[in-house]
Length: 498
Ligand code: NAP
Ligand code: MG
Image 1 (cartoon, rainbow, N blue to C red):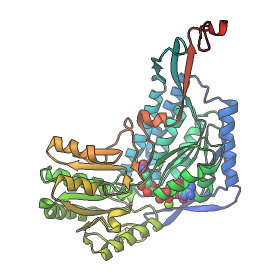
Image 2 (image 1 turned 180 degrees about the vertical axis):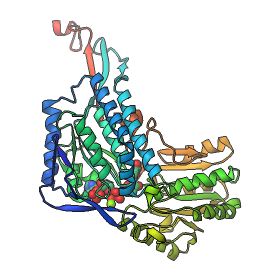
Image 3 (image 1 turned 135 degrees about the vertical axis):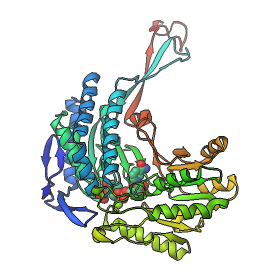
């Protein structure tokens, strides 16, 4: 089956290349369908449509706020009405267990509802200013940026689409969206929902194609006013370079290698369960994953033993049948993760569980990797430094609070981090010291549409979600009104009346 999948100026089209790419079910290695492979020319058409809709027809941008709220709520309802279908599609295409895909759909629905609500909230400030130029009223208005290009990764295909599309639309922008070629199917379905709702032509455009052709054009094109990207740090860096030409606004949500610090006084079983969620949830394909356990030496052996017991009990299988874990997203990514496991073994880390592909029963042809724990890790090891983005966790130990913080911050990333302790003041001290954008005390990974998401250091620029995520899609204009016209005396008494 061939899916055209480009949605440009309100029409479904194929790619001008006439080329197609396979979309694979990672649980079986079988092709699900083929998608069109866009050229730079196809992307330019989508950008032109977005540009015309924003700067010429202006229907979405000028829409009465109340009507824009209604549209956003109808999008949320449209997604909610297709929850089961979307969740199965996502589970098949990405490999995540069905219940996690269902949570993603629910979160996506609420993301559109959240940003529907923000449209009617205050959108500027008034300032008290000095009177050097006479009495002035100074205020700000927030305006849409214009044409926003958006590129998403494969780990949360539908949810990442919602995180980007909802705030951009709420702010009044026009968009060109590209999902990962591995996992485009839920995005195509989302755009079918947008099509049924008849948003003004050119407001939302979808292009399917490879990152280094279609994605590169989105980053470079001078008619794009903002590029928002979620993915790996190297690609984020290349996007920042490509965006320099017209100094378009850049939003980057990138990789991580996040510390999970556990003190001996923490609730033991609780810390084990959260550590499991931290690294094995979504197959470990989570940018904020707690991939570095940094634990107080006195409890390390007991903790690793218990964690390994729990990890060994994890079930793998067809994600639609709701095992604990599904396959990794692709053969290529599985091979990367397996290579890192080999590197860890060669570096002298002690593999205490997992450490191999899983090929039992009906998993034989899928891209399954057993949950893997490496004990006895040291800061110089590549498995400690580099993002693996799979179900692989490293364990390091500390004896003092200072040592725990130093190990936690010994990374070029800064997305997330957590601390487990019964000492409330210590928990706060530690999160104050962690150089990362998202932190947790006595839990790992909960996140909310209301709160800003993003990283320090090589983990990115800017924030998604919440009010901050909305403001990323807005320009700020300063307006100064002279309340005493004709009275300026800057060049002598009487001023303009002289
Ligand atoms: P990736 O290889 O960087 O790809 C991400 C997206 O960028 C895909 O749509 C890809 O398209 C596209 N792309 C690839 N090369 C490009 C280029 N030169 N120019 C423009 N676009 C390009 O990342 P991934 O492997 O899909 O996802 C995993 C990474 O994403 C991890 O590093 C993870 O930490 C990060 N991530 C971060 C967050 C966060 O919020 N911070 C969330 C999720 C994931 P194709 O698929 O067509 O190549
Ligand atoms: Mg990639």
